[in-house]
Image 1 (cartoon, protein in one colour):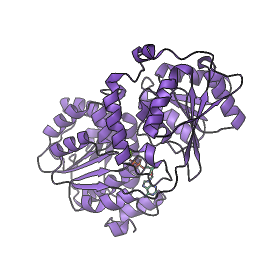
Image 2 (cartoon, rainbow, N blue to C red):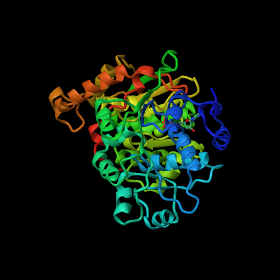
Image 3 (cartoon, rainbow, N blue to C red):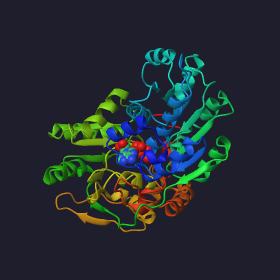
Length: 439
Ligand code: ADP
Ligand code: MG
C-alpha cells in the first residue's frame, strides 16, 4: 500500500516522501480513505502511530481541491489539548502542505496574542489551536467559525482529562451544523464514546490492530535507594554508563528544576520541561534534547504527555508517579528501534506502596536491586500514615485505577514505531492530577 493508493494527490505524496515516509502507517491506511470521502471518523491508535498525518493529509487535500481563490475563510480547525502539541501539529501541517497552496497557522496561550490576530486577519485555510486561547480570540472577533468545513479533535482523551469539554462545545456552537468531524484519541473509553456521540455523525470507527506480538522489549529495573541519595545515584548512573540521551521524570516542577540544576553543576547538560516554564524555554528544551545538544531532559508527567519525544533507550523515574498509569505512559518512551529499552526507577522506602500498585497494574514484579553506598536508610511509613499522605493511592483513587487497568487490558496494542510494550503502554489512563490543568 502506498500513499497514492490511498487517493492522495501527487503534491501531498511528494511532501510526505520528503519527510522520509515510505509507506502509510496502519492508522493512516485506515483513516485516510474515509476522511477523503467526507465521512466523520472516530480513530483510536496509540501515541507515535502517525495520527497527525492520518488526518492532516486528507484534510489538506480537501482544502486544496476546494480552494477559495480570492480570500481564505477559515475552513478547517484542529483542536489540541496543549501548546506543544499544537506547535507540533502545526509544524507537520506546514511540512505536508509544502506543495499545495494552503495557508495555516497556530494559536495557543502563554504568548502574545497580537501577532496571532494579525496572521488570522490575513486569512488562513487551516488553524491549529488550544481551546482557551481560541475562545479568547473568538471573543475578540479575531476569528470566525462560520465557514468551518472540517473540525478535528486531536488527543480527544487528553482534552477530556484536562477539562476542555465545555470549551469544545462552546467552540462548536459557533460552527455550521453541516461539517465533517474527525476525532482522534489514544483510547476508546466510555467517556470518549460519549463525547463522540455528541459531536460525530455516523462516524466510521477506525482502530489499529496489534502490529505484531513480539515479546516485550522494555525491561524494568528498580533501585532501592535512600531518598537523599537519589541525585547522586542518578549522576552515577549517567556517568558510569555514559548515557547520552535520558529522559528523567520527577513528580513535581520544583523537583525537576532542582535535579536539573544539580546535573548541570555536575557537568551534565540538562534542561527541565514543565508547566511553569515559558513556552520558549519548553520548545527550546525539547529541540535541544532531540538534536542531542543536551543529554538529559527532566520532565513532569503532564509536560511529557503527547509530545513527540523520540523513543529512548533509557527512562529514569526519579520518583515513582502517584498514579500507576503514569508509570505506563513514562516507560512508553523507551525501547528504540527494536533495541531493548530500560525503565529505571529510583524507589525510596516511602515509595514502596506505589511500587506495589504499579506491579499490580503491570501484573509483573519489578526487579529490585540495592546498590552499596546508596542503601535506603529511611524506613517505610506505617500504612495509615501513607494513606493520609498527599500522594497516596487512597480509597478515592481505587475505583479509577480499577477501571483504567481494565481498559489497559482490553486495549493492548503496540504501535508501529518499534514499540513493543504491548500490555503496559496502551490505555491512556486518566489522572486526577491532569484534570482541568491547562499547563
Ligand atoms: P501520534 O499522533 O499517533 O502520536 P505522530 O503523528 O506524532 O503520532 O507521529 C509520530 C512520528 O511518526 C512522527 O515523528 C512522524 O513524523 C512519524 N510518522 C508519521 N507517519 C509516518 C509514516 N507513514 N512513516 C514513517 N514515519 C511516520
Ligand atoms: Mg498525535
